[in-house]
Image (cartoon, rainbow, N blue to C red; front, side, top):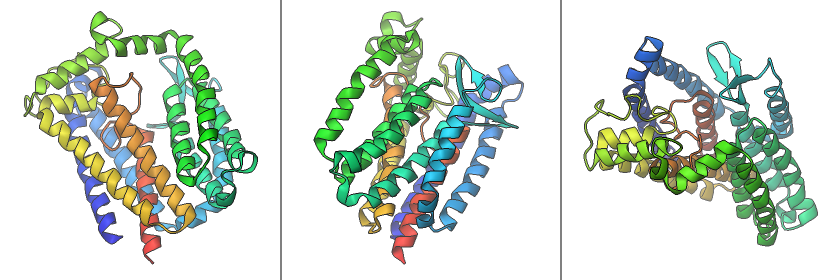
Length: 362
């Protein structure tokens, strides 16, 4: 699988390089105006990249199979962190959400650690319960009793999108493992009223749904972000307005260097530039899926499947939000958007994926 590792590494390098270039392009003017340093976000992103590279190297260096011994401790640590971040004075609050720990120059988001911890725990569980996965009491329910409270703690932050994404990733892993469709269907149908309640009873979530349905009905209000995103993508046409020449990044499009960075790519580099980024993600996921398919170790198979689902889902959701195909959700574009914890843990996930490939080659 050496050829697959080379392909994934090269596509990762290209995606990261595009991210560095576009983060500076999309945030430079905003950073200069608001923070007095046009390279503020670029410098911080470089630090995150350095930390992510170190962590990815460490993830590649160990034998991934040894992680099975730490599956339960990791999930317990994630529960502890998710509880601690909700405590006033410990967790950092921003815009009404309490999702981060402040660690010197860095913000640490425990839900990102919980995502990796849940992947490892679910992979170990599914590897141990392969013959019982169709049994509701022994193969399905125990994993749900871990997943449910984990997701509820993340919702409490509040962060419904991350909670749903973790649940979807685990359900994909269970489907691949051979869980009964009626069990999965029952869980999904049971969760729908809860999700509806969480959306309908929270004004800003309902506003996002209304903006998604028709952003142009209130393009200066709740639909402002989506309408500005569509303007950016439309302005780029085929070849774009030119690198660094975006108009929408001039305080029109909020979160231009994070959640909506693809819109700036589309504006500056055009349809061809945005399509090239999407094609890179398709290639990355395809090559990663080939690693999962060739992995004979059950734990490695489920772990690599979960990593493919995690990165692929994040990319699909971010791209879908940018083009207006999905409601607004603060999931960054993997390896490209500015964002500390997400970038570091995504790089750790890639390190584990390459580790699975290398170990199964031996």
